[in-house]
Image (cartoon, rainbow, N blue to C red; front, side):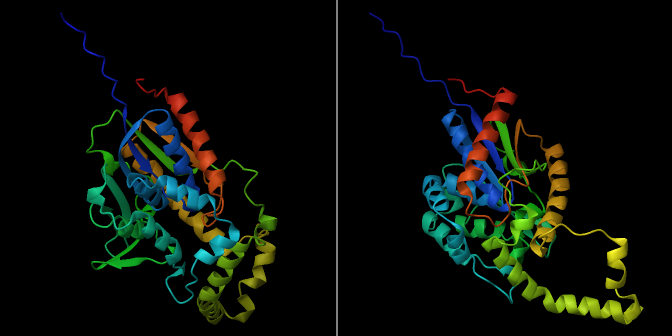
Length: 328
């Protein structure tokens, strides 16, 4: 008497996941991962820059639920306490209190111990090239990748001055290419601005505690440089030709509430948007999920819930449009 073999469950589609840089908008990566897992996809390799490296690393280590719970519990006052001022350092904040919490969650795990291949991308400022972390302490790799220039202090590691991976590779797909997958999903946090109602108006942005705090430290750190620049212009052209004599007549009014953090981060976004298009042209993903760059500001780490929901919605829409389905 013969018995029929029981049917084996179909293998889940294998997904390579590339998570982009973008500060607090990176919470959207959590929502993307949630949707991919709910739909039955198997994330078999992860690469990330900056906040993408953090969320991707925590996920690869199996601690995303704990991290999400912690992040969603943060309010504005909590974020202010977690951001360490660094007036004399090459960055407005050290953020060591945040990274202490991340290190506690990761418990010293090494990248080579993770169940899936993982890459954190950082930028070597001295060598002018990107650095891939594919072994060693996961927390160290994440810390190197998230050093947003002028905002979070860079780190020195093995003679390299390391900063935000988004400077060289805002959406790192290339590190995942060695793994056989059914599809590659990339998440860019630099999508076109869409005028989200949840974003603070320029007129009221200066009243927000986090932006107010960041601007105050930025102003203090930059004051001497500004003085030197103004003095050199005056010495060269004479006081009768100072920039102030012409600005009112020749230039329009700046947006209300525009701060130095805004100008700096928006300048970085311009460069990153060009880099993203260039990189995606070389390694086009099967599914590209985009989060608008005006969804929230880089330091609004108290908006985890909103960004996670935005990531979920964007992921569902992109997957449906691409027709990427599970085999179940």
